Length: 462
Image 1 (cartoon, one colour):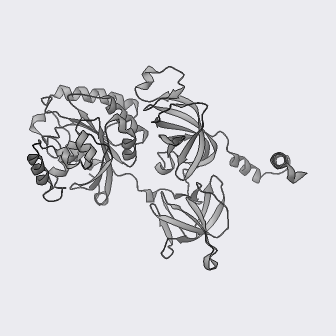
Image 2: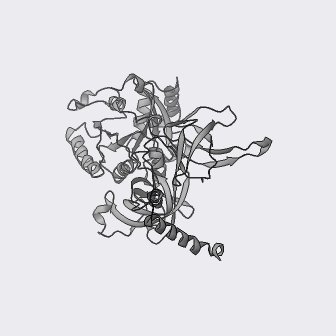
């Protein structure tokens, strides 16, 4: 059971599943059975259905978009506020239809945990596997699998066990270990908030009990300080000579007087002040704060660099080659011999596909040993070469600095997470090794540097 501090916090949970497997009905049941709806809302929807000659469905509580009501599918990633006796939740109702995978990806990227809904009659569908894969790519490790519509399957234990065995085996390939499988009937309210007599063979927790057992992720404020530089502002009015390095703090905290360094440039300085727009300066900036900083030293850094505290061991490195898991959603395949634009935090960099190490999911069974491209809706573990070094972190060390988007032309065609920095030799490491050297090594370094300058700036040496 979460401690008292956890009870005061909200948790983001994504609910997803194949179209018509009942995820919206499940969420509607949560809202109704826990008293989380505005007073009179449930009866108003019942009355509306009666006037229009429609059979009442709990999913109608969520259908806010006219397109959804007309087509019976969830198009956008709706956010529903929900409260149990233990904590508050923001439940993200993500679309299940294959055509709206981008929307599902957007919703799931904000989640700390996930609920995957599977129809007991239809079984594990293509999108059930695809959604499991997307959660794996996004690093969502707390997963609850709900086997819905057990009433239509006669509450048959063998049906539940068969689906559990099949899906558990599939998720194991993705290194996803579900916290629990729960047999439910969302329409009838069985095993949602109360145990059902019809499933006396099931000895586990209800869906609500499993949700309340999830552990909130480690607070970003307790992690190392990191702030991608969004822009550098210089004011000239009223003799204001401040140079302000602005951005949003993604983790940790920093205070005036702290020594900082920037990656990938490795430039160092000390914070003079913490600035806030249209307010008095602060002493400290924390995770989530949109802040500006002035520095004691006047240094030049560009948009996209990441500011870190020099005294901390930050799990951020400069990288020109990365291993990553990606999901490709573009019309054109993701292939070799083409330049793409990679966006990570505030930086943009040209990227090329160097190799596809393996396909993820069912594609691996039908592909050959030498994959040459990722088609639409396919996923893989790949190596990307970047045109110049950028500051990155493994997704599992810092999600904000380890999650990226790939742009093909004008299309945001793919997304992924950084697994590893593969840069064999960083240029700055070479420079650092020469700082303390002398004699022949230093002389050789100076000679090589002079040759490069002469090559690229010949007029300077005429």
